[in-house]
Image (cartoon, helix red, strand yellow):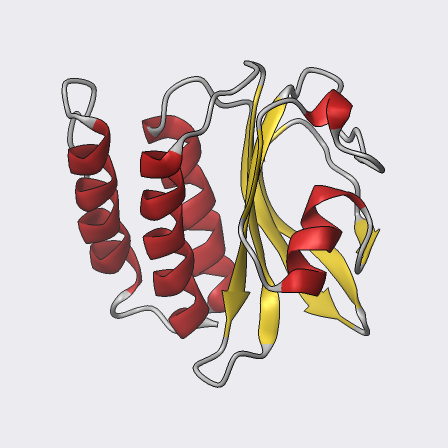
Length: 161
């Protein structure tokens, strides 16, 4: 059985390094994408401090469709180009938004969310699979270290989908 280690005293780079190792341990021998995304969302939500949502949206039929997550119920479908998730998906660019109330077209699935980071998940040949979406109830919660760490986790997941 998998047991997560206590990461509460880690620096942020150490935290993400440990999360990447734990995510690989959880997913290496598992081929089911839903199970892998569910474990990844839980790992992020319960290990990264000060979050209120962590999960996935997958590209299906030209739109983003809700996948496994941890947090309050969420928007089920997001158009490409809409909100933070849809914009990150459209541009294939990680978006770190310090204050979502100032992001034009922000979709408020959880009114408690104040900052958000969305990392596109791409195939080896740069086709969009979906996005990793992480929210916080704090303004300016995410920094460059969070972005770097979440990009690594999203890359691990992209290879498993």
